[in-house]
Amino acid sequence: MSIERIRKPLIASLYQAYLASQDAVAFVDGLLRHYHAGTLERLAAHADREVRRASVFALGQVAEYTANHTLGRAMLDEDRKVRMLAEDAIRKVWFRVGTLSQRRQLVLLSRMNAARQYREASRHARALLDKAPHLAEAWHQRAAALFHLQDYPEAIRHCHEALEMNPYHYIAATTMGHAYMGLDSYVSALESFRRALRLNPNLESVRIQVVRLARLVEE
Image (cartoon, rainbow, N blue to C red; front, side, top):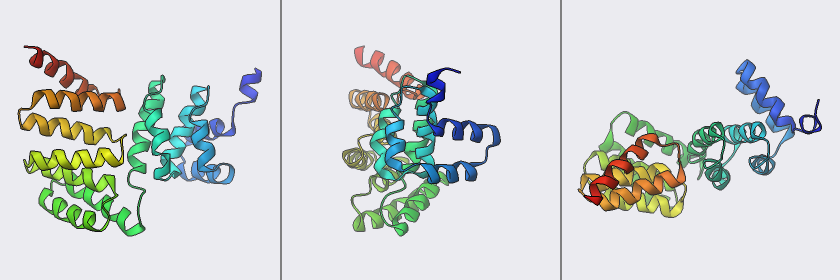
């Protein structure tokens, strides 16, 4: 057994056990007994890709919004699996901000949009933003609702607000691109989609849009 293997942090073993058992409760219990969030964030930049995978996955399970920057950087990792795990994890921590009531409201907004209850989502998001304008995810959830209601200028404004507060919000950048498309503003749409790709290179559908729009703008 190599020295590198012997020195591999415990989290790698915890993660391998989880992959074998799919026992998330046991994995989280092991994390909480051995690691603090700050340590997990440091391990997310470890030289070993298995450790990075384990740490990024762990942050998605237990970290607060403070891990946003670490996970944002992890979306640019050289390892595709790390990038995929970071994409999932960062979307989870976006909802772990504010009071318990505000967190529940963010989840409710997401469910409303998923259920295509766009007017209700827009109304609830506006009420939440009146009380907590610092919640980037509330700005984006309202942007998504407004986009589907075809209020493209307001959707764009809300996406800008979300990105101002959370510069890693690649979904807001993508939504903004689609809203600009709705206004036939192809140059601005291209810039927004490129911004989304810079944040999250895994967005293949956005990459296709960039190629198509780049050709259209050049013509």
